[in-house]
Image 1 (tube, rainbow, N blue to C red):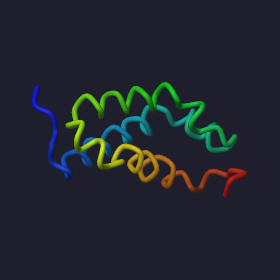
Image 2: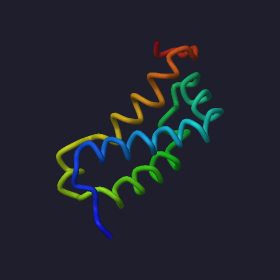
Image 3: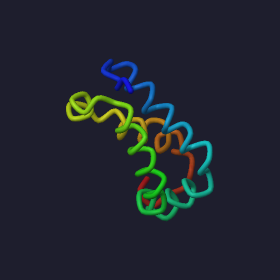
Image 4: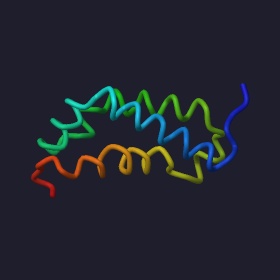
Length: 88
């Protein structure tokens, strides 16, 4: 299996994974933001997404970037800014 070594391809993969997480976990995301427990409530899903990302991206590229974490923030959390939360 060829691992992704291109930065843009790794970003696209991270964003696609985050988009899937957002699509299939809407209720959990809303609950996690409302209760300020996002990372606890979605820990299983986030780790599965990370494992998928890590399995496809070259370790050297993974170690020098944080594309997956950025995608989670950009695709999931920022887009849910309309949800009432005690943290914003």
